[in-house]
Image (tube, rainbow, N blue to C red; front, side, top):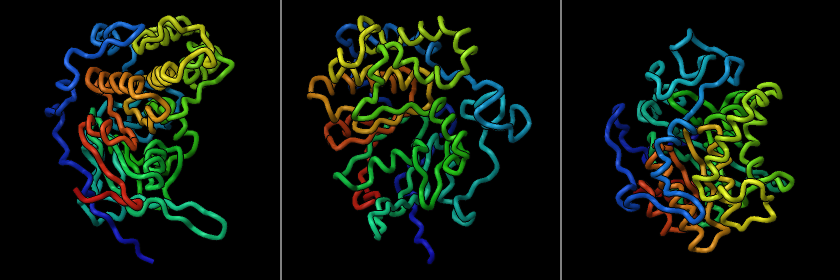
Length: 331
């Protein structure tokens, strides 16, 4: 059965490299000052070098696919916004409108269903979208419309039944599992509604967990002091400098979410994926979390894709996409 292709109506016209982009800065003049932490703008210069992306080690996670310096997937690291690869005209090679070159993260004609007993329940029905580098994109819609499923597909936590996902012009949804794991650990930061902090670890140790996983024992130990300094700096940045040795059970909901944000940033990701990041928080605390996200987007040029049911929060993003019945509503 032939699939009906969906035009990328959600894709904005991609800017040329170095082109202007519209920031949220005007809505948060001067940047926020968080309780227990310094103003984010006061540490932005240090943070740029501290949490900026560190190239991958020569041993992974991606194998070399082209001579050194020619490809984003070179073994010596991931080029930051490389020159576009070979001409790419979409899934079937016949639809130039579906090209993802020029977008930081993009999806083409995603379909996803889940099995419930003997029935296939469709969740996404041909979703296509593109996210520019440094954009803050909000995805909204009613419960069950496919918001979280879409975010999980973008972050390679799951695979689409059909369609594809590109990151910096390279397809990623069909990578082997070990490479997708490395992509999430090194290039995608993820925060969720339920925090997922490890209860036996301190706040500092929870933030360090991705680095413990990414490196072998000797590699981690040789850089342990540097890693701890970086983690402490991130916790200070999100207002938890006084909570380094506390366990999750000793933290409030807002503090746990701040710790989860610091953990998501420890590897210096290029993209932050946030699934209902304020869903379990009161309005005031949720507002503080949003201030952190906006400051990261503005000061670090961090690409953020956020799923939320709160239209007031979504309206603060650069752009809003609405999902209805597993499809993107026409604007």
